[in-house]
Length: 304
Image 1 (cartoon, rainbow, N blue to C red):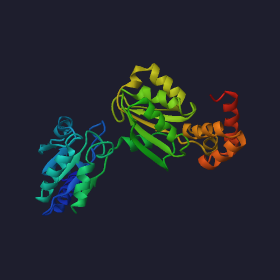
Image 2: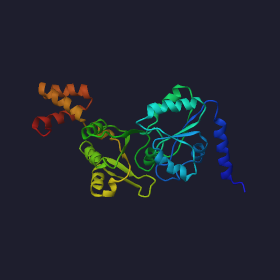
Image 3: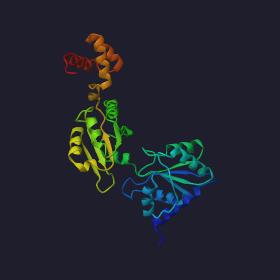
Image 4: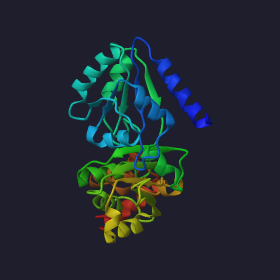
């Protein structure tokens, strides 16, 4: 009996095969971020019919391929070899071979290797075909309960505490939702650094192990999130997406970044409060009332 599912799969295979021409195509294929069922019919069929699959970690992706009975040849493309490997793959595309690019999980290039290859292929005038699917960033945002009309994806955070604090300071007054990835080894330290810069009542979402058995999505304040991660060992396991609510307009107007405060302190050493505040307004754009109050606190020693 011919089912609608069979007809659909046949159409997909015919479509992809008919797309191949004398010059190969590079297919950028999204794979599951955890649950192996989260892959499209089209992605499975493309992985079956291409000549080669370029993978970030061939040992990792082979589990997915075995699950779907895919036996195509694998080619290793990772951050340590991607420049040279990309040249090899580009030549194969020019010879007419079709190649699928996959990462360990999710949509390739989002904090994963592959950008040099895609850039080379585009510059060579060859086709790059996206095969959409799972993405940890979008998955977390869709279930976060925070505004997603405008958001900024920041990738992975810097590894050092000082660099992370600078990162957070630069986004202190941003009114957009912002998102970053973090590892289990640094999630607690990152939240501790964030708590030294952002207000403890700022809403954040911690999403871990998305689509997996121990999936957890927690929306709470920064202060409560820090306590939760510090006290619960399980909340320090897995892969993390952290989503931070943007500053409200009122709050943003009443906050100064460390860099803006430093400008005010330098001016106060050379000028009267009135002059220092006036110049700081011009330099930083912070409201006069906020700068004047900060100047008084610095002068009294409270802002030391």
